[in-house]
Length: 469
Image (cartoon, rainbow, N blue to C red):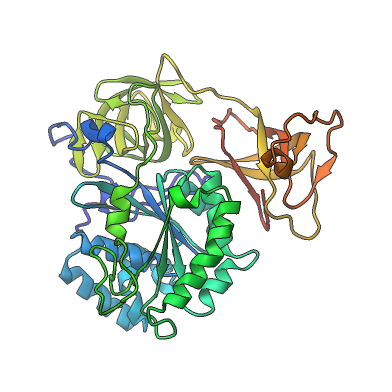
């Protein structure tokens, strides 16, 4: 990989930053020099051959970054010479088996600690599809960064370690595997690939019994989390370190009992939700930098962005003009929903944009509000805490992070009664004073504002240090 320039600067400290992980997201000196061209996949998105943003997530030490690095190597994004450099670097740090993870974990803190901190980004292509990898942190200390990555994903790839003890640690109550699944579902990631990694490890030895044990425990939990396991979830065994069952199907000499597809085949076959290219433009801004003008980065959730378009940056209602659009390294005339893009704007300064702002249509701009009604599920309240009016937390919506306060509890919902079809029961006129762990409650949430409003969407994730909602 060539590195043309330093990575784009991080957003304001209040925002969970998404540092660029490779040169695809670096500030480019030649951003406007290449002539614009139609993006090879933009026009074909209605045919589902440009699925974007599978997000890898896993409990710490499950091998997520190693698997991500292996994907890039197998798809030709990393050459042998680079791999040899990483092998030497890992050996010098007495971390011989970590060299593949260095492809995704690019900063020294991540390599020294052996854990992903920022959301790594990279791109790869199969024979039919172009993907963006979002390698999100697995450690519980970096949940805000993980949320930012998950909010951009179409497909979730849950990496689980088959090694004895590692799966159990992540799966037990309060473990990261459970939290990641609930987080993915909450943030709208409806398609899930569960890869059971480290099947080549000496304590596992491609054991069918171990694979079946893990799948048998995960299926009921995935169902209880709201996933349709038969329709929307795929299981498969892999070795991220060796690349087994990733680009090509498993050799029977390695594993006689597996006859299913490899990882690339599974990713290619998944149908992601269709988005409206003719709808109002909605692009949450995840980062920005200055390069002969102001450049913003994000994923287009709705509408089409084209060179020459006049738009609004919300919530500050700044009128801007699109100077150029880049998908990966290519300058394109327009980009459709689902594309991860860099957009150069005129009419606004970099300092006037914060991660979490939204690039929006002028005729149909996104609403800016300070208070809204939401249905929340309480996942975990520590130290016998209760959830009541006056509770303060941190609100995460796409790439925005703001402090908020629960103003009022309106209704507690009995999900079991709802599933059983008892919808005729009248709502209680008495509003709950508080709720506890596991409760589902409708409430009013107020964003604690300093100078401006914040954009909100239907699905939210609220967390507090040690307490998750």
